[in-house]
Image (cartoon, rainbow, N blue to C red; front, side, top):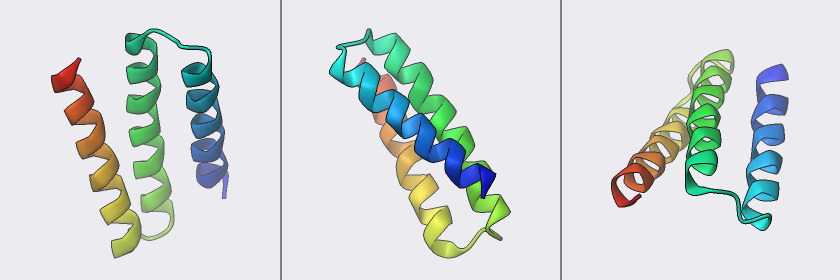
Length: 69
């Protein structure tokens, strides 16, 4: 459950940074951390297919951001 809490806290931080119009690099750093934490959560939950799929989508979204930035 700690993994889930970390993901939710990271999402709150990202939301707050976005509202504060943080620099893109700062947001990207937080998104990368979110991917790592989501992977940890998926592993802790036994790597079920829904969690794995969510992590893959998140990883893809971060990769697209990196290309567009």
